[in-house]
Image (cartoon, rainbow, N blue to C red):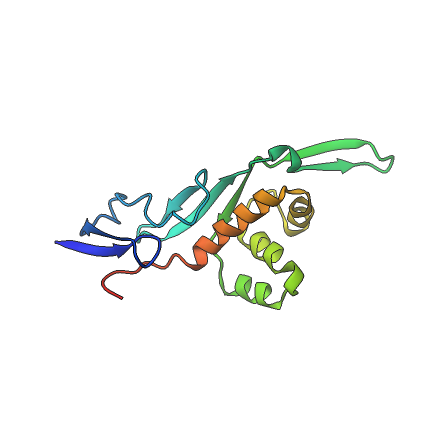
Length: 153
């Protein structure tokens, strides 16, 4: 028996076989709002859990650490950013952020990479190319609007 699953906007519907989400047959479903290069990991229920975004201008995503003499002693490059789903604490932090910094806070809270803490992310965010910032916002927004919808609405 086929189920109708919303893919992208209200006008885009597809009939799929029951169990297709569990079998991973809809890997590209719902990605129309994501940058083409983004790689998505899904949970068993079909919801996106992680999105890896390769940066268009990775040379700007390099953090340089200097010693007291001002010499660069270490560099950390971030050719891609990995975003995860937001929880209640993340949403509260985003809502409490100023209007000017809400997008940066949203992306910082979703970017849960082991070596990239909040302080480093804030510096990195200011260095990123504008197109990479907009693409990052699209990825995080995908988590907020990617609830699975079945049946007629």
